[in-house]
Length: 324
Length: 161
Image (spheres, chains in turn purple, brown):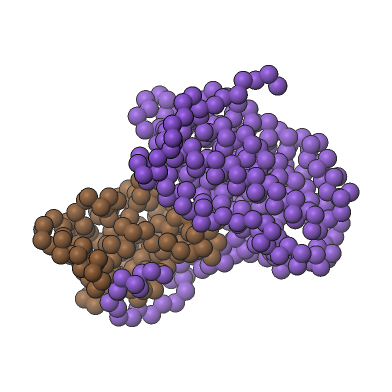
């Protein structure tokens, strides 16, 4: 590769006592307080459970996790780093370095899962598969292409779609196992990754919207069109990838609903309206419950389907009561 | 009332620079404005809790529903942002509260919409609805219709508590 490396032109000492955008500090603090390492998750408790999976199920799981490893590697070594030169504030640069490092932690954590559950031979075979699977490679190439491109806002779009959409064909599987009380510690680890990706997607999407402020109507339209075109391109490939992986175990249709559901959230992170109607985003309740145990209640008091509630009397609130 | 809350209140009263509202919907939205986008789509009269400390505090003068986001929780800590805490320290804002609507992201697992749930529990009012990010068109419709029913003239929600 003879490509010239893009770096920030001018670096000044970062002053955290002079903040231009409070979001930078808020997100930095959240990321720091959410910091974790795979060594803290007792993955070895899943060894017995792993033994109950069929050979097809094991193969699927290994492949899903190598696919996720590839995406996290791209995001850690290219994606988040490529955003640094276009940062508006020095604190934004610092947040990207945090995001880049966490993506490397995520990538490494799949190797922790592998070394706990599988043999070296199985691991090597899964990594070989990841270099040979056409749809996985295509997904990587599409995203990498935009990271090497010239347009800083397009890089943010590609990055947000990766963080908030492309991971989910993979994330589905550990949620599925968890809902069947299998590989539950692995699922706990994946939930930490899912939580991190939400903060990353929110932040990069927010910075994209800041970048749009003051742009001409033509430019705004160009970026909106671009976002939806890229989403369609990635979506078509994701559907193929999903069939490749999940057809042997008969889960592809439900995975696609999960893709639609997360595609909507990715678009919302960029400030655009959801694209898929609720008729195709109705993910199986077991998967949603595995993702967010309390979300299944859905708190729809209006339609009377939420949990029953008795209204009591208002209590005086003291300051310390709010220190939860 | 704690010294800081009392100081906030006295300060506000001394300067008479409070912003009184009779809106039936009060919301918070940070500079990212996801929640504001949802509120705009409701096409209802709504008051926004000040984002910056330099703005006059918002005081409710009539029963209302609170609509607030939960940002990426730190294992459930710091889920209620300081601006919302400050707003709820005014007695009027707790007495007039009739229900809470939460915006959030299921990626935060058990802490999904935790700020809305905690406020509802603390103030003994129901969580009326939860939705993700800036909400889908279906969420908008459900909340719009739900609030219209919630505030029908005969509704007990108007009564003093």
